[in-house]
Length: 212
Image 1 (cartoon, rainbow, N blue to C red):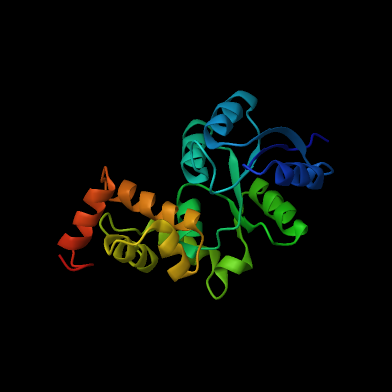
Image 2 (tube, one colour; image 1 turned 135 degrees about the vertical axis):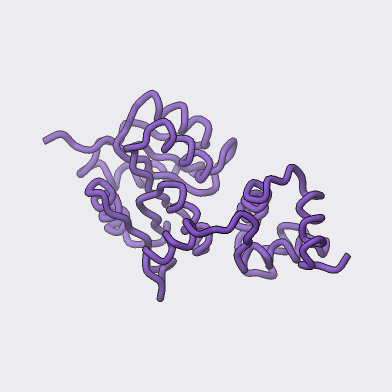
């Protein structure tokens, strides 16, 4: 029986090797990449069944890479394997076409299960993200975004940035990683169609998120 073809993408080479060894029994790993742009080019060339990728990667983040791949290869299944456990990020990943969202510190069997479910047309999100929510709740959270609506977490990030805090300081205050803060910042800019940090701060002032 032909094994499903899988591509891996993460900027940590040791992790790539570990995941490749983990999946080797059930899947054919046909490629691995360490940045988002290389992943997009490689996946289009190799045409896999599944891509397992991280959120934070150089050149192009995992969400943008996943979105581009779903546009070109709509039947492709995307499984995010990440340390980012922010529900807003998981919801955005699902909105952009992901079938799975797995934490890097989950049991190895969780990733394998997520891939098998994706290949059957189902979705899987690690319980570390869903907690008291359902996968359907996260899907609706991403699907029902108002064009000018920001999530509570995005507002928290924006308020702190507008107050002059650096991304590292915001990460410390909110107890998240700097990559998560950067994700929220650039997601807000893209979502609101703003071109610079200055425009983002102006938006915060106009909408009374911070004092002028």
